[in-house]
Length: 220
Image (tube, rainbow, N blue to C red):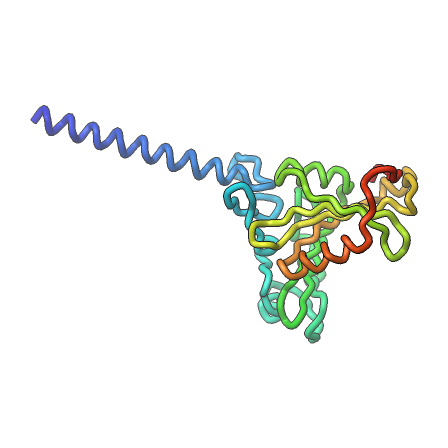
């Protein structure tokens, strides 16, 4: 009886230790998701699933790349009946969409009846948004170029392991420092793109890319 009792106790202790280990691991993965403060609150930014040293990105929150117009309409989005269009949330439901605790404005880009890109705009300075995503996803790849309106642009890209990306663009104006008023009005738009659009946009920026040195920029 003594031997039986010892074996049962050992098995019970082993089970408890294994369960504690699994719970601690799952908690660490959950806490690493951007926007999660680790106290059980829902993430305020789309979950980015860890994949080794990178992350997997398949859309923004419940909007997934490859969704069609019918699926978007069932989620409350208004979509013109075109094969290439922009879908937006119904006006009454817009205030329900948030990011980083602030109201977010979403534009869902559809091409050939499939979601290819999601733009998420919130009233946060681009510089602050950049710092937040650096903390969440690490250092981005930076592209500096002149826009068609002759403005200096910096684009910051975080490319996921499956080739899709999340990016932020900062507009510094006519290659000079911006005014204080312009900085106060600045907002951020995070762009979530599938693999095809990521490759296309990066290729386009490289054609107009500038050296990163000797270019005066503002502080947005």
